[in-house]
Length: 272
Length: 247
Image 1 (cartoon, one colour):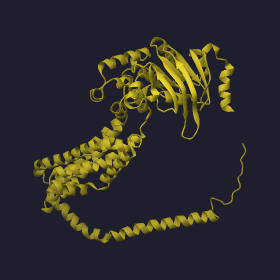
Image 2: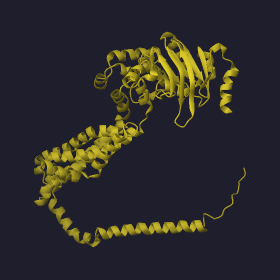
Image 3: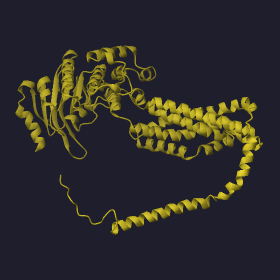
Image 4: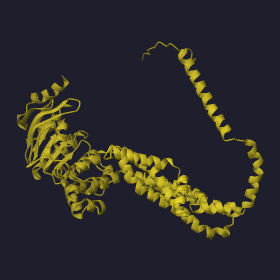
């Protein structure tokens, strides 16, 4: 076996030469920029680590007053908990129903026209860009307090999140079976029902379950702006300094979130 | 059954893919098209299925000229024109039986097939077609679990479910081992005879053409080099198809 020696202008181990000097300078500048960005975040958020230390007493007092959780309020918490889960379910269902046709229009390999493609992408982008909390505020103003605006907010925001992921899934699917069905003389809807849906259904269900999991977390927060559910209950208890009820509600939230996460993960694993 | 007359197609980049091409495939006949890469074989099939629209010429399927059809009329005409490819192109997550039965989708109403599923009569017929290709016992299996040869047989069964008059095959054995290739060619030959199908098959395997074709068409640079019964095709004529490509 022979080894062919190549002429070397610069020894990469010592890094000598103009190329290496430039690389080192670039790295230094990048590190300085990174450090600069980190420092400015501390300044902008007015970070005061000493406040954390002085605030420990207040936090300990809060925890002390929250123990033990007030389990007598458990029956009263049932309905808001159900509302929270149903807000998420409603929002996810609305999201799926609207996102699926939009995703077909927004998928480059399926869209019937460039106009439909850009229009669908625009709707998906807009509904995703506006946070669900802002949608909730808008819907609370429009339809009043309660779980309905919460469900609507999650539904509209889910259109954006699901629409984008559905469209990407459709764009990545194997088109050969679809073309094969088209050439048998099947109509568009038949190709959709018997070719596209069976091909992408597991992925769509997986994405939807993940979205449901996310929506359950979001629906807890939506209550803070009057969109119903256990979040609203939590805000009320906080405002009334009912810390033992707060701790009960936090336990319920923990159990709901964890359960939803585990069920969603298990189902997605089975679909994979 | 299938008659092509004066077919020409020039791609947008200016390349002439087919020039004044003509062929006829009768019912019960297996015609094999040979030719080098880029000679126009696959383009010919794409024109016949009207995936590509030729610049000139006529494609007659019985009494219907496919070249003048668009929209719903073209869709209806396609019902009688089945196609299989190098890859079986099955819906991998659906069962073998469902894949076969989807060949008949175009013959049934959209609402019924989308929301009510495939009619029982079609599922029963699909079992029969699976029996014809020797895979009746795999009906319930997922298509994604099949071997290449099995998948290609299922694709052929799906094309039968379409109840076509013409079967087009674009290199159907290209990804199969020699034994599976022979199986598929034997099957196509048998179906041409038993179902009175006009089968037009594009191949690269010259020996298979010598073994199974009723007629062999040689194609070079988008033109017909020869169109002869199997027994009259000389080895030299076939060799020239590929020498031309290398030069």
